Amino acid sequence: MQMALVEKQLSQHEDAELRRLVEEQKAVRVEIERRQKMQQVQQERAEEERRALVRSKELTLQRQSHNLEQSTHLRNVRVKQCISRPWTFSYYVAWPLATYSKFGSYDIQGKGKRKKSGKKGKKGRKHKGKK
Image (cartoon, rainbow, N blue to C red; front, side, top):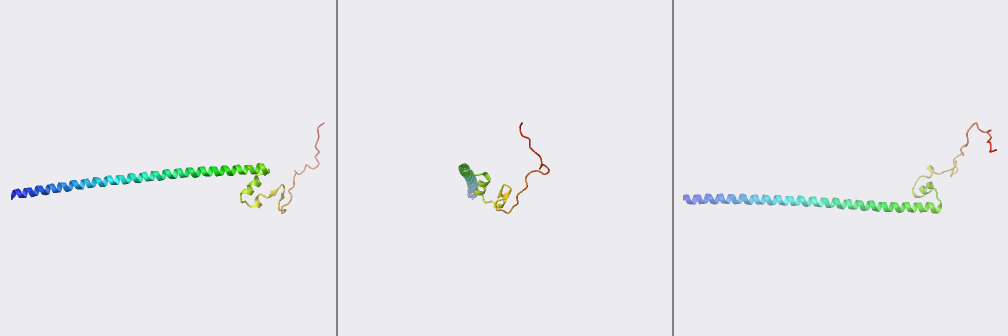
């Protein structure tokens, strides 16, 4: 009976040792899987950041190209039609007319008065020409 008892204890001890080893292996596998998932998530984030950076660069280049085309077209319109900068600005930008509609000293719409020119106190002064 003692032999049977010893064998039974040995068997239980071996079973406990086997269970412990299995649990350790399971824990190691879980840790390895967790690390792999973390690494995969990091790689996906890095790929998303790279894609966002590439897309941002593409949009910047498209915007630069569009702006260059618009600027070239605007310059060509100015040169071909002999148009001043204020008129070109008002044509291409929606801007209130009243802020830039002064023509010389008169208001284009005829609402303003002529400004006085010259300085006071110098009416009778004569200019001397070359002798």
